Image (cartoon, rainbow, N blue to C red; front, side, top):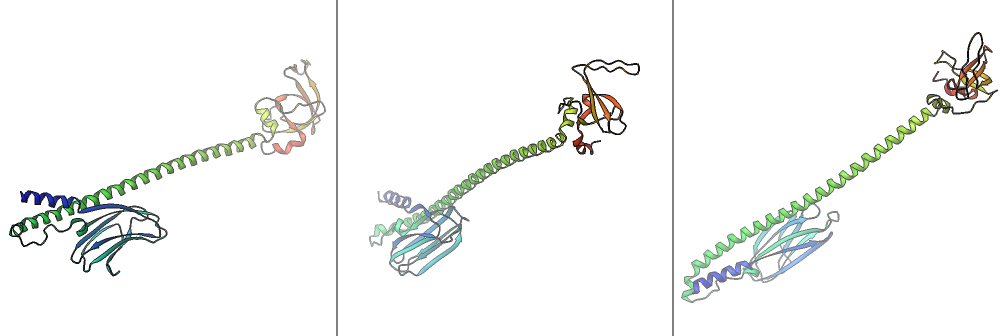
Length: 299
């Protein structure tokens, strides 16, 4: 019965022999832990940075007299095992003293005498001496299982770190896409507004030219007005003259008939240069003569 009990006891000790922890280390701060060891005790510390900054951190292990046992600088993941040379409190600290790195999350495991103890206390009983080979096998098996557990913790921590990185990248891509969409909408709106203003300026200079294109008068001309008009048969030229009469009824003569009406009046204009009077439709009248400079580029 002692043999199965010894195996069960050894495996039970292995289950509690490794303790895993997660700690947050603030910017420009440190997180320290300690274990009380006796001379000859073995202890190991394995860690990995899961989140924050450049995913690196410093580790220092000090003995009971504050002597430095081991140090790691700017490491993403590392581990160290040592044998205590003196009795007392052994301290291990994670340092995050660079202001620009921000807070960091560190997962670490501690294994060794404080969590495992001695499987085979020194006894002089002959039956216990017969178990020494079995103890050695159990210790070797325990060491192998501890190594597997450390590797498993390392893989889990890496998976967690990679997941955080992927989620962060997805979030940044989402916000960047939203920003690009907003910029695209803004640029489209600005282009439409700019082109609209551009064409409005061209079409509104002069206003009566726009009216001519739509066959709607921009101004109401009266007799005696000095106007700019397009002579009949000379679409690309302009001239000036004075409105002498506005005909609203049909006029007949032996030379020419003028089909005037209330809906389509005819304007009899005396040319400023030839002083000849000619009847024109409303669509031939462009503007007042004082605005003739607005038409120089078009005619």
